[in-house]
Length: 321
Image (cartoon, rainbow, N blue to C red; front, side, top):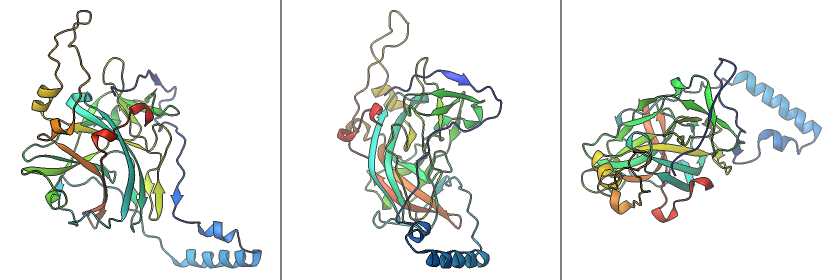
């Protein structure tokens, strides 16, 4: 998994718009009011319409809160992973170790159902409710750098996944902040000296150039918000996919990713081998724990959902995701 091949194109208009992609339909937990009303007679339907009109005149809907990034460090309000209100299931994963700026790339697809009382921001970026939970040795601060949405300049590309949509092409990167979960050891059985970090996903519909031939993989989530009672999943290739950059320690890179084979005679560049790395190799450097979902309640982050990542034997080929 080294990235997409793609050719950049520029829109004729200077106005920047989100790339167009088929939208995933919202999946509610049951039939709505109007679906049920359609099964009734005209008299009953008229009564329902009148009742709804009366409610609209008396109810004042609360304003929706604007999603905010998680604090740089915080405590979670739970000490158990059971009975969480957001259900994350069917987690699939692929990845590669040769991402930009010595970061691994991890891509996930999963189903998510909101059984809680508040809405979730489920797209990419730092304001998303969705985070990758990773354990690092205490003292190491994972510095994430992601494609900069402000540098797209109206340029977009076609990539192999998803094959039916275009994505923005960022020309530079920026720092993104991860968040340290102060009491993460209360939730996860970690080795001594490790602590838990929540890493944000790459921004929605945005890629960057990895090398001369390849683009990075994009987060593509065709629904920004998940309301209470809704479920989101997307089986289409490249859709319903969250991409995370995983910072790696320089010592790990030196031990496992730098090629000892010398230079290529034709290009003069270092020869590369596709690394075969397992959790045994990464155990003393980091551990990918799973996908977490968070919300803010009165300014305090709340841990709402979690699902563990698949084992190494369960990793899939990127062309299948």
